[in-house]
Amino acid sequence: MRLGGRLDSAARASAAALDLHTEVLGPHEVETMRSLDALGLVYPFQGRLPAAETISRDVLERRIRELGEEHLDTLVARMHLVGVLMPRGLPSAAAHQLALVRDGCGGSTRHTRSSRGGVGRKCPRTRTWTGSTRSGSITIRRGAPDFGR
Image 1 (cartoon, rainbow, N blue to C red):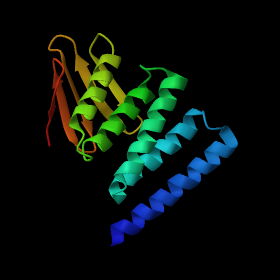
Image 2: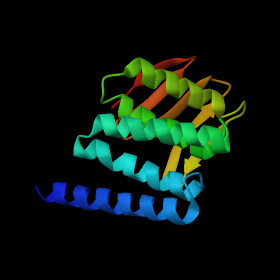
Image 3: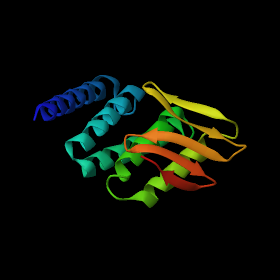
Image 4: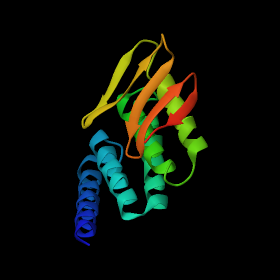
């Protein structure tokens, strides 16, 4: 399969970048965490969901410890974890992570963005949070998730 070869190449490149960042910058630097996250983003497309979940949880724990709960990179890590939990058939765990993202976005309408584009936005008037993951779009109204496709 042609795409499979590209995914293998992407996984090798992500692993090499992670090794280099870990060696040069150390395991707790932001760029090292981003490299680890990139590797975790490739794994679901290879069907390696358990490994992707392990990496996503590791990235999230590191970002919470190093950057704090409300840092943008931490919120993005939570969204990446949601993107792994849904295909693994864990919607309640995904909804919990989404509620934490919603709560971490603050009290005013705020757009949260990653370096790759918009993650979502929160509106205190309507009490909704709308975002997107690799699995589809998500809207949370008053804490109840609606997983759209």
